[in-house]
Picture 1 (cartoon, rainbow, N blue to C red):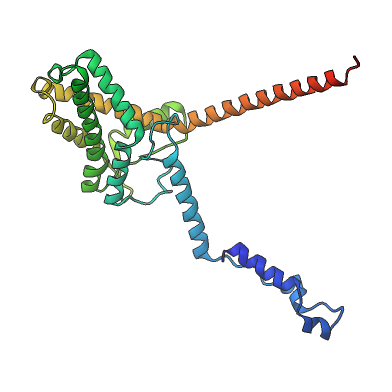
Picture 2 (cartoon, rainbow, N blue to C red):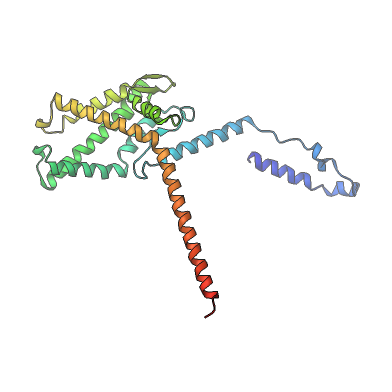
Length: 282
């Protein structure tokens, strides 16, 4: 029974005196009826902590379910360092896998494979459905390799939290700088800040693995460095989206509410006009 339920139950008991008390002293006020004698409801510290933990869990779940632009998965973003507990290594791998196999990722990989097909990148893959299938498979493997290495393997080894912790306040330039700096700065499971080795080493390892399934013409040190730099740039851009998505989301919600309000006002005006026309004499 919760605190509020217990308090309500006790209040109900106090408001109804027993028949024996009523018979013994009709018209008199019993000790239970006196509000001054009613002990104040005490708040259990454990229940208070549990309520705060439940609230934090709900906020965490809401953040995880909040997709950027309503389609992009946002599993690795939290609003404040003090609101969440450190992830276990199993949780790190689970989140990395969840992000890798999200329905959105299958769609994006399909688009990327189509662009590569049109550009005839990796000519050794060929054209047609067979060539598209090879490009799709390689692009999907790139996605999984990167997510698992950056979000699972290296964070688990180095005890680093792979999530992005939003700053959420301050000027736009400051927040932009903060988001970009998270490419270089990581938060450990204990709350300290260190150089973001998982970001650099994880992407490098994923690109090294890709050399095993790409054609020989697409391999090489210069190609790998170019791909690594591109991926780092994409991750930095992703941090910017994670930082400012709450603001964008709030703006879109307000815009949608204003649109609904205007539409409602127009509907009310039309209804009023129809009523006026019906009341008007022929």
